[in-house]
Image (tube, rainbow, N blue to C red; front, side, top):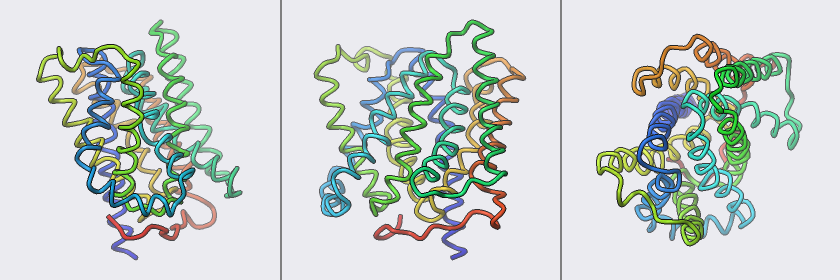
Length: 306
């Protein structure tokens, strides 16, 4: 039990680091030489090819889980989610991704658990919701006051957060192992991507500097497309959906600091305060200080482990 919790905690921390890095690199990509669709090709197409043999072997497990549930897992954790975030990153800074995606996912996941399974929301968690909303509102108002037009990206991020909150609960109920889940999600996303590409214009991948393409290939395909999704799913399996979602508390401050260090953004007190409020709110909303003695560990339903 203790080793399982330790493994889940390590996986959750690694997922947070990779999530923050992905947000920074994605913001850099869509504001320089590449577009959202170019990065989606790297994010889902390359991992789908790498995991193709595993995808074929995962089909029996996916059929056992049921097509509607698996389709919901792909649609909420695959290409639609990625395109929403990547498109929003064209209008809003990386810190906004962290606050409006990573910050609101635990809140939305908790609300879904309450609506679907009547999971109790105590005063601590309700206070966390308020802090997250306050942090998000502060960031949105700062962007409006500065005339950045970031509200378009913020709206897309909120839709993406709702998708991932649904995905967290849907994946939990498929019974797929992390690698099976990664294969199914990337494979299904690649099929959707082929459909989207048939209606899109030429990609910028063929004309962009190779250094930019290489950077995005490593982060989108290897780190986010393979390692990120597997580590997060491993955290869900070993900690439960609620505890795994707490790792999102690390992402807003990590991304806000990383945007200053790596993307040259100025230090803005409002952004740092917003990230801090959301981080604390995520911990409270996730039930870290729940009155019932803390978060319970959900029993694993999957077949095997990472």
